[in-house]
Image: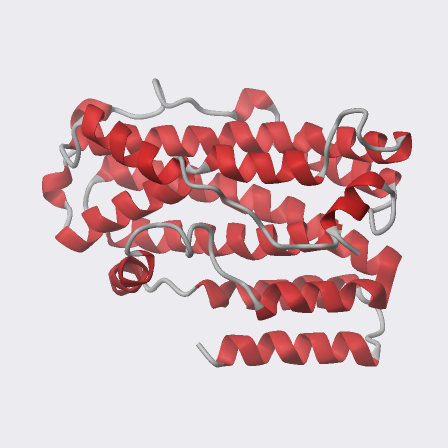
Length: 286
């Protein structure tokens, strides 16, 4: 199945009632009234990068690039789950329900990007104009996910959101600037809720479609790379550096994927067993 084919037919999509339950659950657990904004959530005047090590400053710069690529991430979902007359009505209805989540997720991720950029400027890491230009150079580069089954977008995001949440927690625990610590705590809480949504959707896929989604999920893990791994200048050298700062290893999130599978599947089939074994092997190799 090609991406074009699944975006135009209901093949492989989660039953819409299942999707609605997941979206409603996410929105009920995270009402807008509990949200936060960059302008008032932190005392930016107290931000002080002088309290950070060089490696910690580098980590902040790295995650700012990752978060700031939000337009590219959002475009992938808009292109893969279109909400226009290019798709059949049942597909539109499914995608429109997903869109309720996607726009909230995009707002929160964009807030993350703005908060990290504001921290850099307020703390003295970067000058606003220079940072804007640097983010523009990387943000101008294309982003895509090479998937041909809808479940793969949720499997990818599950791992990515959990890995990001874990890193923010670990970075928060080693930095000495309370303002940055507060920013990272906010970001981690949001990423945890995003992970929970992806885990809910994945569980519903496994319960409703069973073995048919095993191979697509396996393909995600087999070729998994964190966002911008192929486009951000110096990504791999930078990723190794930030791993030294706060024990970064995205494969640690694989354990959480295995837990999602275990909770979703009452009785494992041979194919599910093979999937879990494969994910565990990918974790142990890192």
